[in-house]
Length: 184
Image 1 (cartoon, rainbow, N blue to C red):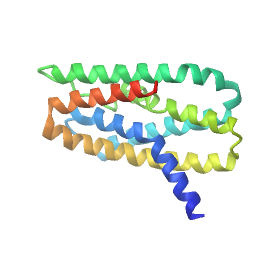
Image 2 (cartoon, rainbow, N blue to C red):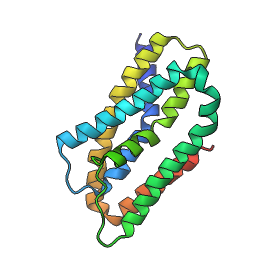
Image 3 (spheres, rainbow, N blue to C red):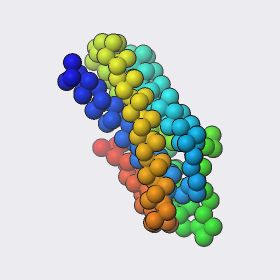
């Protein structure tokens, strides 16, 4: 039983690594954060991430071909957009604050980090994984995503306070590299 739980948690952590990276990088320029804003962003990211995984698992047989062809391109495009925006933002004298509470930023970040969860859900369904295991994985994904996004926002804020413009630029580059990594 312990091995099962450890495996589920490691699985969930591996899927939410991108959520952590995006929340860390996107929060570098926040001027102030509150518990409510962190909770809201974390919950939305977790809902999107878990929803994509469950959707992929539930409709795996229908989306198999489509996900394999499109997921990498869509994930790359979204991460490239966010990364380039951060780099440009980093070099503006009067930096615009990237507000993760803005619906567009929040949804783009959530989707960009969840495409891999959709593909994994499809793959597991096609491999014949039991639905009861997918339920356990979904719960773990939800919880781990909330924690990773909250830690990312708080950590990004602290890094942003110390490193300023360079942190934003490096954060943007990290997101672009993650996007490029989708092709390998």
